[in-house]
Image 1 (cartoon, rainbow, N blue to C red):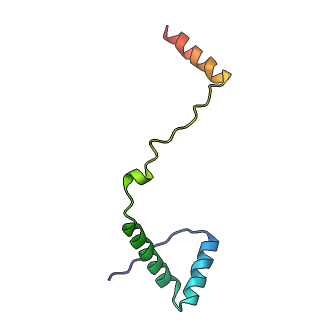
Image 2 (image 1 turned 180 degrees about the vertical axis):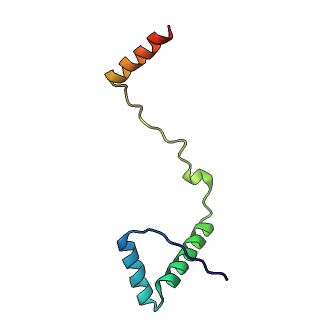
Image 3 (image 1 turned 180 degrees about the horizontal axis):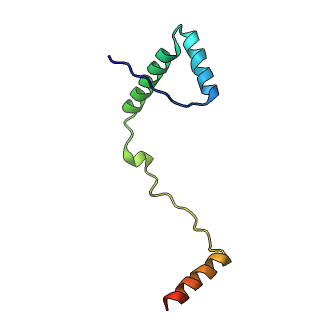
Length: 82
């Protein structure tokens, strides 16, 4: 297996958790990170998530009414078109 370097920015508390996990398992930070990433991908692959499970197209948002400033701007645009 070829190893490459991956530089990522993560939250300091997450790095501390990684370091503590690595120490508890007598591993270095790199090995622990690699194992946890592989585990995460295995979980995602096994989850059998369908597109419909995460599709947000059918969510509804409340339309916000136009402000008086926006109405004025629309009237101005419409006047120019005449």
